Length: 112
Image (tube, rainbow, N blue to C red; front, side, top):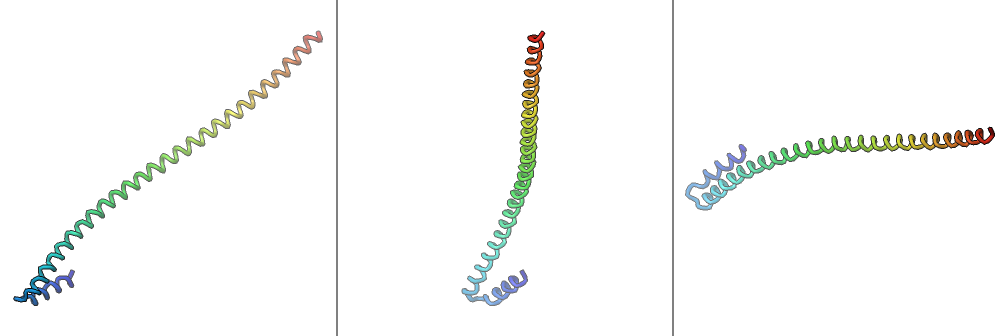
């Protein structure tokens, strides 16, 4: 900023009545004003980017939470399936044992 100020002072001193220097000084003023506007735009864009980044972090957190819930639900489904298969196996065993007892009872009745 100090160098820019010194350059501006030099241009103003050199300008005097010289039209070329006056044009250069005016052009420099325009560039300086444009630079200020661009810095303002950059700050505004940075604010927007920060907001978007914050929203993205929030979205990622929500996604991670939902993903955790999904994994927990999938694990619960697997556990319930395992339990169902175990119960079915026990029921089949009981049916088989019941059939053996029925056969034994029928044999005892026939023997009597």
